[in-house]
Image (tube, rainbow, N blue to C red; front, side, top):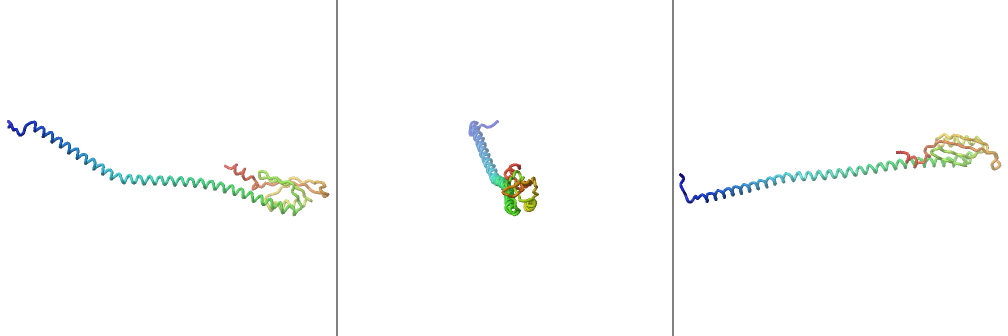
Length: 192
């Protein structure tokens, strides 16, 4: 039989047991909180470099996207410049052809005694009508113009005109295909 000790009264014993359980639970909770805080600190310490890497990668991505957009804009500008250069080359070629045409008409026709009455250029086709004193002038003028322009000049008609200003003359009509004289704007619009 257990000895009865008043110092160890059952209520006091329960209170001490209960206090001990609360102290153990409090220490456990404190230790758990300390462990959780330590774990969070370690995780935060490990996450800081990852966050810095993520930020660096995001800035690199943004820079590459800006670079790609700038490159795309530059390519669009270059394409536009190429199209404009092509149009300018066509216009320059057409202008050179017109200068060559004008110079040939100014220099060759008067030298051979041919008077130009009508000039028509349509879709690269050149039609010339005029008057000459004789058939030799028509032939030599056509030959000189063809050599100068680098295109064949075809005689379409040659008719005696009768008496014009007291002299017998011939009416002539020449035709040639000169693609450089095509309307540069229309041909540029026709291309895709």
